[in-house]
Length: 299
Image (tube, rainbow, N blue to C red):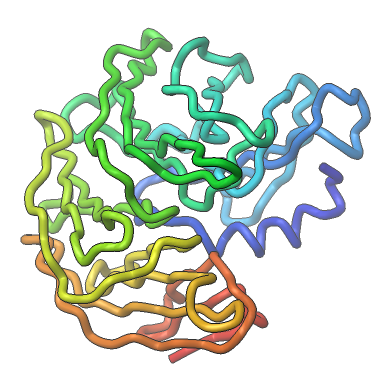
């Protein structure tokens, strides 16, 4: 990936960043593909946001292929620790951790799944990191998210100490986002069971990941390609379904969210007769969010 393209890439990926961090866990992003070409027009780039302005550095030893699924984790002080493309897990030395993720069927050497993985810091141990990720299942020529798994990394030992699956049924593609609990320690995650009105509310607490509620919302988001995002203050949760409404249309489902109890209240739906999109993010300006659809800002 060429260094001259980094500003454009930064703009695009900033729309689909999902977790709300108060520390520096998201201060390093990794981009790129085809590092084995040994040509600086290709390969991996590390984008560091430590000082407020993005600094791009070419990674000569970078070999990971990144596309829609792209997650990274830094320490509380902003040092890069781990990154993944949904298939492989790499450490800060750009070395692969073998047999880390549950392997899904690959249709490219990188996962074409928006919000397919997310890192979260352990609420209990500062050396431990959770990686929650999607597993794919192939039916004919189509791929579906058939389960959600997680693993726990001990960053001090640089090894995986636990692996498990938390959801063993099909969920909507994407929709993997996290919000800090009102207690300032734990994390909330909400998953939508595909083609149903069921939303699974999980909490990451000192004892691990736990299902809090299997909630029936009364509205169904058809399975397609989508994303979810919490507002910076955690008061709103927005779901975007990019392709299943009309001719390449899309829909946004706006909900209120309570960071203390994970109570969700459906507010309204906006349907757009426009080319489908996946990326969306709330602005720091109250009640404004930004989509990839024609670069719109929507109040």
